[in-house]
Image (cartoon, rainbow over all chains, first blue to last red; front, side, top):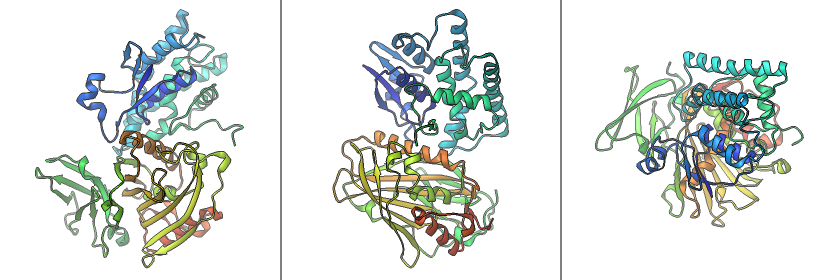
Length: 212
Length: 288
């Protein structure tokens, strides 16, 4: 059985929910009261994850306490197609780079978003500048891909890199960071939304072509 | 930030915190109607509230009610809204946490009682593409026009609450007892004939940003409080994503600013009611 310690508004938890949906992996959610309860900081939760954050995934004998590690685990164990985490050195290295980028640089987008949602204030000009410089890195990479026929962040098929970057990028506006000036990024967001099994979360709107 | 001189806005009561959010012996600063405030909780649990600047103004009034801390910067002629259900047994109280919205408080209230958006913003829970029609409801003014009600509202909802097992037609009344408060009285799916309450207490920081304090009083013995909370946060975060794109950020109240349909009756009544009240704060009175 797979269990996911989950909070509905967490962009990191959404990465895991989304990959599970795309891989048709069933799991039981364990709902954590992050806001306003701060349950993830409680002594009980420290015993589950000393890093005091979510998501945490339990899969059989494994307990994994890091978003990227969970994505890698799910791809290695539950993706028979192998395209979510390709084995060839070049693509694998690119996927790892983007996972690092999502966890490090894009953490700012997630921080700004949760701060704004929990009434902690809007981004400062300096924070906005940093957020946009990170988004510009994605935009430039995707615009180049549009010209060279590479529709995904790494290689010719979607990988867990796309999942890790999609969540904070698609939710940026909720944190006060507008995506107006990133056309290549918009096109890529839409490609992700058209994947078979794609699911939304609050703040992510579905592709409605043909739906209404 | 500049304190408003809108007397209608100043003479209201506003929830500015959930009391349990402020630990004993600590202080919190906040802004209400452009006025910076410091709230202090002493070691014996009592609250005090003082203006952080503009000491020449009248000192704020402070009350605790329904688990929330209420402040008025003016001298209101009425008490905090009466919600008798807080005294009744049988419902589970859920504090839903504070949610910040970079938009006028009245935009939040208007969105809360709008029925038309359910199918498109809360697809799969409060509405669906196949049942987007808003059945007729009526709008009433009560308590000498102090309160606005939308009554007899109904909607087909795939998952009306955390306790819902499947789709059902759900009946609602909306109560708007102040420009910044709305309470929904919704048929319980668990106890036939009983009502669940969900209430929003909007705390306007300035004309274009607010914090929403909210509660639920629900009949639900099945789900734990965290499960119910996740359901509400899903709904509210969907609303928030829509609200932060609405322009202008202040709520337009001039009739020439809208092309309403019959399903917008409550929204139109709210805008006219706000306009007549003399309130300026958070509203856009221009005609184009």
